[in-house]
Length: 257
Image (cartoon, rainbow, N blue to C red):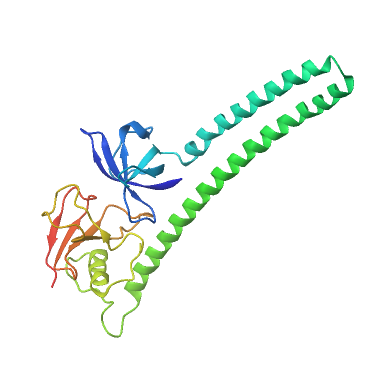
């Protein structure tokens, strides 16, 4: 099971893309695969399974807002299969009981063991689901702590060479700090995401060749996840900087020397 947040959603066409946690490649999803309890919105956190189609594109096979639902949805099929198997076995045992009392005792012991097997199966699925949720929240907490430590370090420490000191460009400490990190090449708060290609699917920026644009996270104070603020650069090394505060819905050009 994977997790991420909805990066792009086309309401009229019924498709969108998911910004996957700890993975640079986005995942395509169609509305027919969505099982959400609320309307689809950009920035919404989701959980999903994915596979590659015949064009080698990652696409979601199921999208849900509850981490446990995917694990739980597979459990009933397995249990039903076990129940059907046990029912057939019980019928065979009853037929055999007419011929031998000793075999009847053996079959009775086997039938009493079946509830234990079903109980173990249910316990196993519950344990897997709990471990998956714990791993997700641990990873999210780790990223948040790293981002907070990085922000604190930038405010309380000074670099001898001046490279790590953010020059006031916008007046926003987090935005200016992110620009400084881009110029010096990191370290970034989300190394698996920052510096990855931005595909300009929304069409808000001028059209350029693939790989021209790169995106970087601007930390949002008081938010435990990546938030909606990004800086998108153009060129390598960057020659143009754009800022979005609403998760790619709009951009403003920054004057960066």
